[in-house]
Image: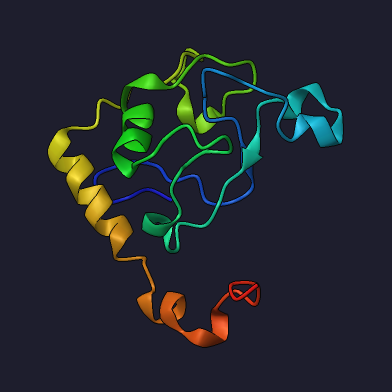
Length: 128
């Protein structure tokens, strides 16, 4: 999927998004070298409420996540093709600050406060 400003979304599955400190990720389960560094792509629903971000919690804010996609994608062995240029190098999206603000505003529209405040969906362990 591509957003109106031309930014591609990942859309489910598993991907290596070019984090600098790669661990085996999915490759630890499948034992396939081609799965190393790949992690499950989570839903964006309620993303503003799910910090810290990434499999290891390295990013505390959505701003930091967008900074990664803007300029910090690393050249990793299994980097997702959607994050590479035609020559195989990592994309540098250089997302302008006003676009980052707009993306974060959009992501916040995906927050379902009715669900997160409904007692039917509360943790059954919170009183223990």
